[in-house]
Amino acid sequence: MYAVIVTGGKQYKVSEGEVLDVEKLENAAGDVVTFKPIMCSRDGQSVIGAPEVEGASVTAEVVKQGRGDKILVFKYKAKKNYRKRQGHRQPFTQIKITKIAF
Image 1: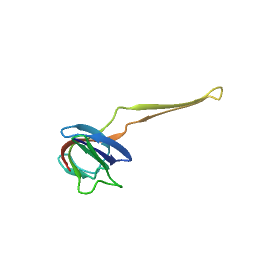
Image 2 (image 1 turned 90 degrees about the horizontal axis):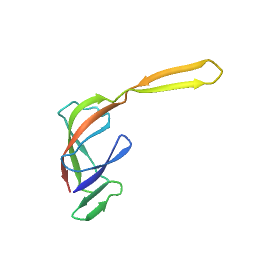
Image 3 (image 1 turned 120 degrees about the vertical axis):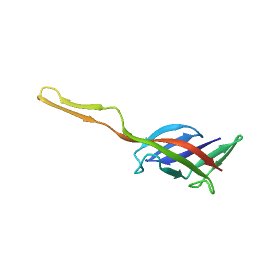
Image 4 (image 1 turned 45 degrees about the vertical axis):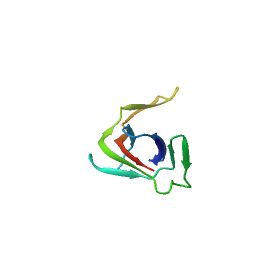
């Protein structure tokens, strides 16, 4: 059984017991978060919501808050002596899917 949820402007295909990193949520570690799935599938049957599946929910537990690896942004213009270096670490929330109610 799996479901497709939307969080942070992205869609994720999730199943029970799965751990994944999503865009930062304003919840502390140990909190329980509920998502409304836009699609559910069980026993080969798929149900697509408009916009969400009626009566279905996906429950997840926040494992931790973190920041990703540093990426470097380097801007350069040839022959103009222009160089600019910038770093960025994207914040994320790690969640564990505990239950898919359908």
